[in-house]
Length: 178
Image: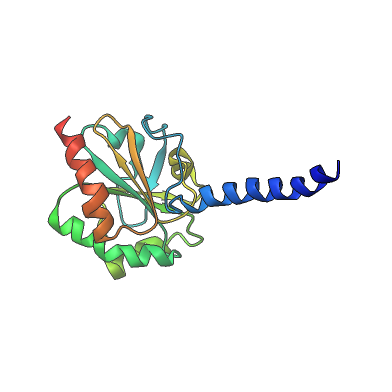
């Protein structure tokens, strides 16, 4: 009986160490999403100030596109923004924006006026309707949506040239082949 008392703490330590060891091997930028390979749930967002047209799930039918969730309050969004502007200038893929959780309705449009507007369509999302449709956990998050309106990939954090070249652009090209 005394041996069991000495073995239990060792067994507990091994179980905890194995659990933590597996957790440390996972990429913290990868959060599984139940929406991958699912159609974007229906949503419709009003246009931000200065735009006539908003953004809805119906706008995602017909071509492969990126959906980028951003906010003027988001520091990481500011980091990725110059790269989004480069993508717009290169005209490689439509980028649609969801301006998420702005306390001031003029903040998003003012931010875009200051730093540039890479978006084909933008929806104003103060109540998180679009964010909920995509299962957003924070900003920035970017989704690749195929021509049928199916979410194919979710990227958490700023898009960098490395992420674009290694992951996003190859997937977009593959999806365009059909």
